[in-house]
Picture 1 (spheres, rainbow, N blue to C red):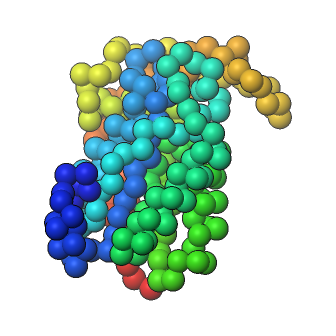
Picture 2 (picture 1 turned 90 degrees about the vertical axis):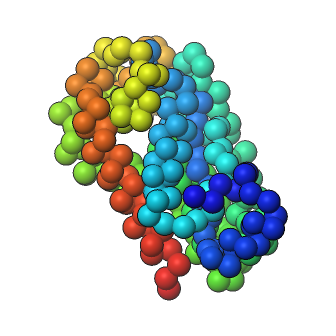
Picture 3 (picture 1 turned 120 degrees about the vertical axis):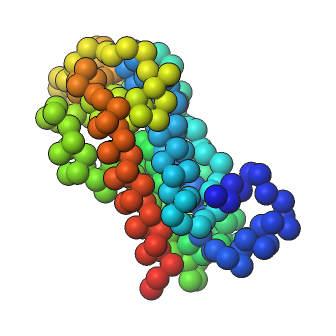
Length: 238
């Protein structure tokens, strides 16, 4: 793995002859129920990318810990940024990576929030026409694998801090899992927007953590690793 923060500029020039691909991982500091740590999104994507590095050669940029959190924004511990901030940050990272000779730029997010992903994708859409020869991919593994991950789950409509996410954390960092929060499926009145959603979503869980297992987590992580490795294998090809 070529960890960008741990190499010298001489190393960078040497490695640039071997790969023109960089991955920017994005996570959050966001509530994940009473049983998972606030860095769950960040930890998962970081550890998955470490495993991907044994299959593909790429520069791995330092993780961006902050993201856009909407429905979880009122819960204790969540510290988010605005879509505007994320767009500006993503724009600067993409443009400067391109200036430094990188041509395959992937923004991979462990957080799948709709406004968060829209901000990243919008930035890439705006820039792609002005960066000659660049290939940009923006995705969350959860978007690519929703059918496969749903098939692993015993819980219909499982989502945030539920069965699958808890299973992944049991596999990657079991020592950080503090028991299991209760099953919860928030009833948020649609189509209304609220300043604080905690009235309708007290526990911060969407699914059933009680059905989580380390074995399911291992299978989910392998799906993610294979999926990301596939994208990396294709990104340098026209």
